[in-house]
Length: 385
Image 1 (cartoon, helix red, strand yellow):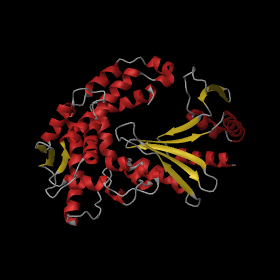
Image 2 (cartoon, helix red, strand yellow):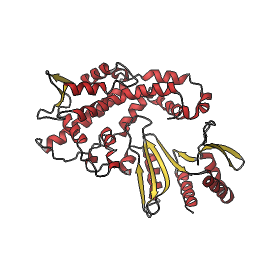
Image 3 (tube, one colour):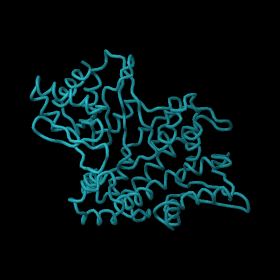
Image 4 (cartoon, one colour):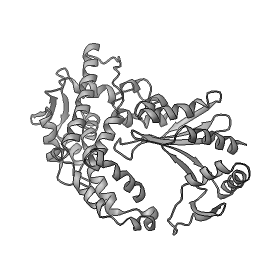
């Protein structure tokens, strides 16, 4: 995330109390709708398995909700980042270019890693466990493996906070009993939750390696139906968007119903703010990228890439000659970059207006409306021709 992006993003926190709370809200909105999945696990009744799925889903969603309401109790430094951003010199943003701001990035990582600890803790526990769920619905793990799980969080930007994080889990019903060799982890509030965790972590691997990259994302989203379908679909993405963006995306994609297309979805390892859906659409007959979009619970952005300055210049000249209104829309939405020390930076003339681009340049339409969609389709048609 560039400093410019994070500055704009940080402004959104006002309706949530803090940027950290906005990031927790983002996690909640990125969760899949609960849909039970019927699976066979030796030693467990199907009704218990579904009960476990609901227990783990409810536990995690409730945890995020309480974390949002009381971030400090969960060891999440909610104020530090916002205080820094209040005093930032906006005039230095463009000068920093690709480099961004090291302190801003460090402070952002601190509160995001604190948020991410909670789902990552159960992920790591499940992967390392001797038994994710035994007949007593406990997670069983050797003491040495449990210590290794905790050590895996030692490299976070927040130091010495694991005690507070574990105390927060304890207040939510997580209990650890141990003997000389083993730890037995249970939850009073959601007794069968580790059976639900087992379902998410033991989904069958796909024969396609790229699909297996979505296992962490499916886990983070508590997406049980992904047990049989590894990659989230476009409808899953739409369900995480606000209604008007969902409608706009549906309108755009409906224009390609008569074409053979495929989409490529980027796997994400987190669902905190900044970790959004990133999708590219291609024509299957020539594998040519048509457009891309990125989306989150409160934004939608459609993007076009032009590969080379020569391609871009041809489009600029054609638009300026044949459709002045479309040309002006194209020019006004074109992404300008200011990192002049970048070797890929160059100046391009949009009529009588100069803009700096990186490489072949890109165009991004943030939060488009129906008028923008019509123009996007006209631009796609021009590029295809």
